[in-house]
Picture 1 (cartoon, rainbow, N blue to C red):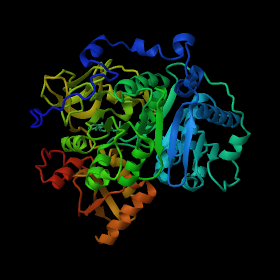
Picture 2 (picture 1 turned 60 degrees about the vertical axis):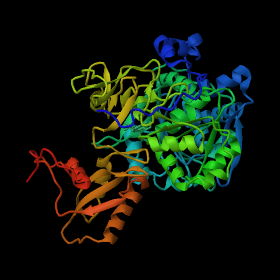
Picture 3 (picture 1 turned 90 degrees about the horizontal axis):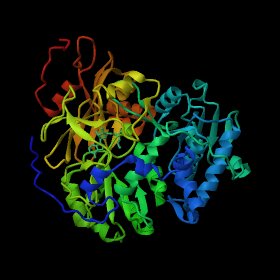
Picture 4 (picture 1 turned 45 degrees about the horizontal axis):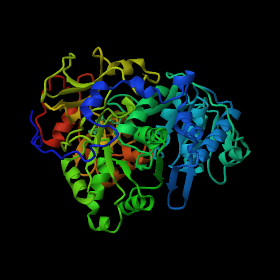
Length: 575
Ligand code: PRX
């Protein structure tokens, strides 16, 4: 299948990027050469927090700015040495509470310096970090803490109200960051504990295969899956930070993602600090004025964001851009959903920069298929595999397909940052590797004759709204808890700004009548119980939902209704 955009190419902008000549680097690349950077090449052990922070201090770069933080109330700057001392203290706070290697420690709070210190300190004691997005509500929080068997949680007084402590017997300690920390059993006041803790600590030296982080993410069936990553990830975080983000010594780098999502950890924490860059964190919500102000204020040079944000900035128009000095920008990147060629062209026009698409997933741990400053760009394409990684389009039997044939986007196993398990669920893990030698992503794509990959869609029912991945099952499960809802089926409906929005088809219980008020009430029920981003933006009531004979709601039929497409094979439908 030939894409109509195939012919369009935007020339390389920085032939002197860290990657150099793509073909040569790709052909000569060895992961062993990258691994030499870190302490295991001399000691046989490592710790990501050490490699990201303390290593720079030991090399005499402790005075360099590591973190520039601002929100509506705070405006702060931290050097590498500041972060070393703070994370040492936090490691001691955790140790005093009995936390040790391999324990799961979750963070549930907004982007603040304390969040970053908590994550680094957790890694220093060898515990496994579990980031939770601050918008998660009771059920979402409980599911994740319960499944992972988290023993400690760092949160704020406001968010603490969403943690069902009496239903989580393994969660022994909660560290609360903020004023007026209640003095209940099991609660620790972050500030007083930090002020008493020593700023020296013993780093827990780890093996490459020891745990690092669990990110919960959605599939098309079942509860969210705990994607488990190990310390070894850092090789790829470091390398892609160098050749994809193109980070250099003087860069001021801003990744707009929250650490509740994988982009906010792999590229909001690990990649920039492993590369010794200055990392910008802006707290608070999206607003075009705020974002441009952030770029101007700090002189951001490398900026990593997402298509929905770029589309919203595009919607905000060009007048606002003229009010800010954005001339510091030299490299812009995007991830999370398909990046429209129109947005790329607009970026060239208004920022004077190509926006470089990157493709990867929570499960892959780091970037895999990317556009690079030194490669010509075909707008609409995700780019080419990073050196050290082989990607292909395979059919359902694992046969590699020729150019322009659509199929499963697959990655040759293994690569350094590949997930090592799905927590508590080996069966789900194996599904990804069902074709020998390949990781099957669940995305469909094709490759062109120059080796560029073109995203076509998801193969399963997973919804991607504003770059956030939503499992329809989780939303449906919440919907049917509402007293008016008999059955619910949830799909992603195409949307010009958000990529997709969540649409729910609902059949009502006896005694309930369809109304706009009821729609609103049901949407709010999901928002309060699960999270704002999981709440349906559209609801349609139906007398009956299409189901298989075994009782499974047929989402593909709902989708066909919505898009006014043929419904296809209905041989398994109930009646
Ligand atoms: O469908 C692909 C889409 O996002 C999915 C992964 O979502 P998540 O694990 O939440 O990670 C997002 C950030 C790493 C993929 O299976 N996706 C991600 N990047 C792109 C994309 N779709 C199109 N183009 C991309 N560049």
